[in-house]
Length: 325
Ligand code: TXA
Ligand code: MG
Image 1 (cartoon, helix red, strand yellow):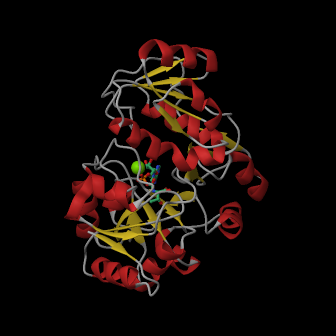
Image 2 (cartoon, helix red, strand yellow; image 1 turned 90 degrees about the vertical axis):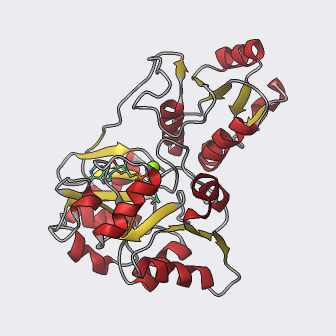
């Protein structure tokens, strides 16, 4: 069920009760909605994997409300990692470090490390505070589907199977940056609103991007690498002319920045810049499935700042990527 706050955090308190009793709750963060359970209760965390249909070897992010919890989660914290926490939290950054043995293996997907983040959303922070425990949470979508940026999206995927705290539409719209801080150079496993430059600036350490490139390779539907995918085939373009030609020839549903609105009636706007595009991308992919038309075409945005994350998510959602290197 969807619980809408009326100003007194009633839904957050109900949610915290469910978490304390070993249940699962969906809650808003600044990036996307999460599907959370008590990080120190392995049986509770197992329910998340079952609900999502998530492979057991894909680890979860542990969400905290204060730095107090770090001693219970990380084996050690290098100074440069501490600098990220102090300067970039609360915010869309998940930091991987060696885990304390007390972090259940199911949370870590069997790895010796754990990813932790402090979300910048008042409901998320209050939920953790009232639950009195860190909350392990992946994005609140069925495995392979676009991540949810509203309570309605969570409801589409899980219906009444989970208690959903409605916090309206999220601010960022793509998942947190994931950085492995166990060693220098730091390694970025997932791009997000916190950029490699942000991390480099704050740590003074070199940063490498370890996101598998899939440019120029056609992906077959159902391929293991396809994520965030709509049900209809999605063609992703780097080049605006090729994009416009394809939309016209195939009567495709078009997803692009607002300035392309006139190219077709079947248009879904990503807003005016990369930041808007991040906030709207997943909603656009879900909406496209509902619109008339057999095929979807999306045009990448400028590969700058959060635009890098937008383009990377588009590529992962794609059935075909046009344009090569
Ligand atoms: O913005 C977000 O991060 C959202 C909100 C709810 O906080 N959460 C989220 O979780 O996107 P999820 O489970 O959908 O994505 C977590 C990513 C996965 O790609 C996972 O493989 C990676 O983080 N990850 C987590 N722990 C890891 C670890 N110890 N080592 C390597 N990768 C890890
Ligand atoms: Mg996810």
